[in-house]
Length: 195
Image 1 (cartoon, rainbow, N blue to C red):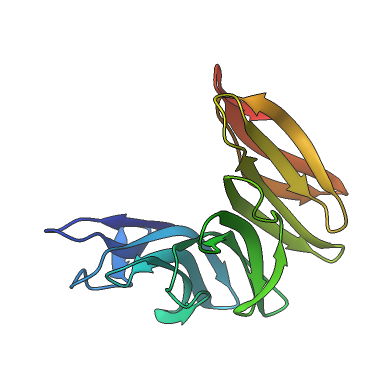
Image 2: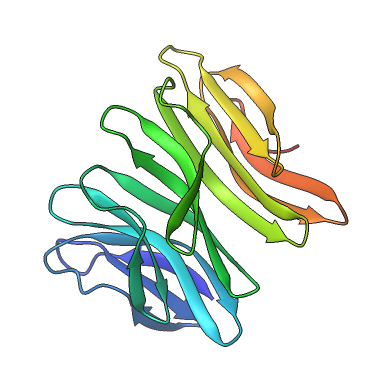
């Protein structure tokens, strides 16, 4: 199962592949869309991503091709990561509050938590993982300045800083095994890092 997009003419079409068989989630007319993450659970295919409503990007996910909006489209938003646990759908991404990008996660289309408060220039929740012990999220935020990126992960109770003060840094994936939290990402000067 692979999520992504392609551009047949002028607009990006969100899609996914099962082996090499492609399924379109949008039709490319008139708006663009991209799929960012995918999970197969209990016979269903779940895809996180976003589509453009001619004005802004709308964070959304698809369940077997049916779209569920996470934001109302009045400001930009994106869904980066999806995780299905016990029938509940968890999505991580960001939305703009009118001036700043706010890192957040949603459960069953309802926003649960903001990870940034709008004082940062940019916040983005990049990956989400769920198990019996809770919800885990990794991401980044940025203050205005040339060396201002910080990566972090949230363990269900505490936000933990991984790297700070870099020209660029990102924590792109999180997973949990036997109580240990694994986060991958990168900084300027290091293509990938594991924390």
